Image (cartoon, rainbow, N blue to C red; front, side, top):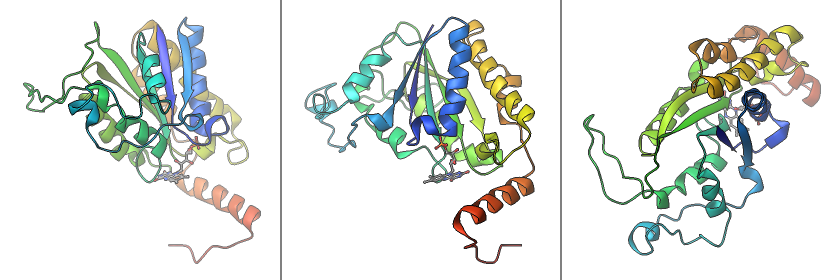
Length: 250
Ligand SMILES: Cc1cc2nc3c(=O)[nH]c(=O)nc-3n(C[C@H](O)[C@H](O)[C@H](O)COP(=O)(O)O)c2cc1C
């Protein structure tokens, strides 16, 4: 099995998103997968200009084809069985790096509109894959409540629905990502359990072709209460900035 992870976190290897992603990939590798991570922040990927040249003028070919790294990245998608989109939550959505890449997928689709039985229109794919591939979302966020991922999950599900060659394979979601940090959370045993769940999920993806409900839940378990998260985070911020906090909301 070939797994390509598209890593859209600007902090790249220094961040929680990559920590979770690489732990997942280590499990997948151990189970025999070939894995690769493409760091979007290292690449030059220009914004889609919305010119539609890739549909109407030079079909399948973007105006930036030889001018940036997007075409090279798309070439890596060939022969991949599972693609992972990894991103932190930025203002309730995906990072700008990932969204910029998503917009540039337009040349891969045909401009025609197919209507489906479920009553949801779709653009057909330009290159029909022999088998549908899987697309998995992996994300971290700062707040503790799991519903902070809701807008992103809804967005990605809708985007994958429009990608004729891919099926949505679920989302590995790590809220209160800061609680994976031993400075904020002294309970290293609990942190390790979450990381082990990411490794297990990686193995399952390879051996079972899907991630179990148990693993989806285990990567998201709260590592502390919302109050504890707020208190430990606020104390850390006070210590590093000198207190600059307006009166707290009750
Ligand atoms: C610009 C920006 C916007 C953010 N927006 C949110 C948000 O809407 N909700 C949230 O829970 N966390 C938000 N965060 C926190 C990040 O999602 C969180 O720290 C994440 O784990 C960072 O991933 P990284 O360590 O891989 O960089 C935001 C962080 C930044 C820098």
